Image (cartoon, rainbow, N blue to C red; front, side):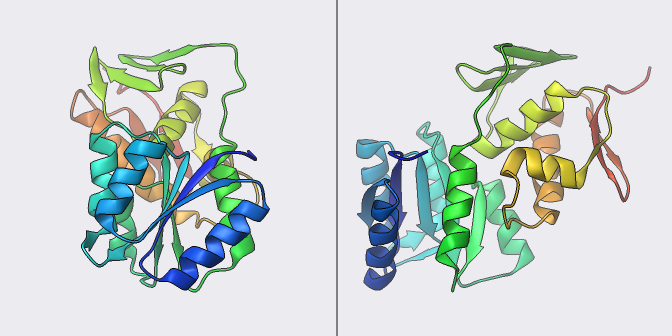
Length: 227
């Protein structure tokens, strides 16, 4: 989506300059920040569509920045930039409300593909509220509720829930879920599906019985428990 606003947050000037130059060339509006404090302030002021967020910042942790953005109601997609590649840290980043993760050094074309995939996740159905059992998702406000209580979800978690709500009772393969939520051709690893489903499942189960059923070695289904 050309014209979308991107906030680049990194304490290494050469990375900020490089990303700002590339993103501007491809038609995006770009803001930059070099610290956690600047990132929070810029996000509140400029309301970006995507935040490219370094995990290690001089005055804090990028994951804490992401959590702060979510607490303040930001719907921006957050892509963590980091030199780390530990699965535990990836899971932690997603749990904080992140939407994707790319390890430094990264291929700029891959990063652009991920940004475009995040921006391209638009609903194409006429239905404005999706429901299954006691779960509902308002597509206009992008608010999810269970048994009337709001479920705090990141943009990617909302897109994942929307996909399940569009296919209730159907066993969906991991690869199919990955392509539908992250977009065809994206380099995000398929195991991220497992991580996100786990996060979504825990958030939903805080308000009611299990709804997301795992089919080992294949995928997942949105299905109410048999009584």
